[in-house]
Length: 448
Image 1 (cartoon, rainbow, N blue to C red):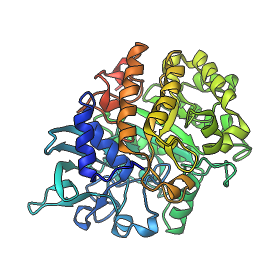
Image 2 (cartoon, helix red, strand yellow; image 1 turned 90 degrees about the vertical axis):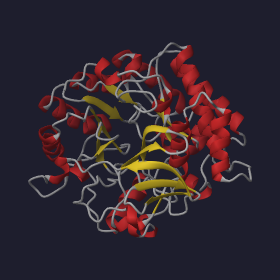
Image 3 (cartoon, rainbow, N blue to C red; image 1 turned 30 degrees about the vertical axis):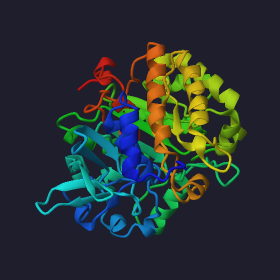
């Protein structure tokens, strides 16, 4: 899709040179997120009880091949994330979510001295550190379930990710978002015989959080995200706000103020959003996925059918009246704007569209954030666009995101830790690596 005969290395170096205001850490991180990482067998942990925190598959696969085609990377599990430093670009510590792709030009392997290195087309570009196995992962729940499956932590331990509903009721080609493999991911884990609970009992979630709170001696965990698939009818007899609300209420009753509570849900009516606020939730993520009106209806047909784009945006503004604009942070999936056959044909067109959306929300004090699109093969967009969007799109998005934030005199969104290259822990895009440093978590009064 980049329309270039340049090698991956040449593309990276050309963009680092052309966009000097974007940290090289961010350029490399975006490329790793869009192309994935191949793993030499020497770089894989031997089991789930080892010294490295393994990939938890916390909501979607974030892999560019199915589990059945990952070989040793499926059996022995790659790490949840990696930390890059040094190399020819002098990288400051950069945390990257692991997306496995055996065909990637990036390879993680051990050198003769036993150290881990990342190479691009055979050239070493960074030393690699792996996340240590947290103590709380070593303690099972009373029923034998693991903390990793119930309440995994990501972003180097900063965020507890509570996917309490593993399935989405937007189902089939007429409803599923074209980039999302949440339903397929559940199926493939069940087919592989892995533990992957469809609906997590509230009691399990609370017990897992108790273990995290007890054994997280450094208080590295600062926030939790409560999320799962969209509910269009009911789950266990409950509509969406009631279903997710019972977890929010139980967590905040048991652990008042311990973590920044975040909910990712559909754009719900104002009265439902108020209940989340009343329970003690501090941040609301009604993700709008893609800005362009035409593409929204194609890429997110379920959201268009059940809520509609205009109503979705209106509810975002209603939520801002409840939480305050700063604490409403809708996500979009960066890159799907260019997905063939219906996406924008040029980077300039895609950036112009997304910039319009950023300005629309930021001018009202709402700060969206984004996830770098991983073209998962079981999704229609991933199947038809295995290369994803061009790296240039992602680099230019970082530039326009920062410019728009600064123009509206906004600061990095809360609930993501410290911003800036060498500081950021947000691992599924590099927008936090690109912004000016600021201790957002402490600014928002997180205990611990």
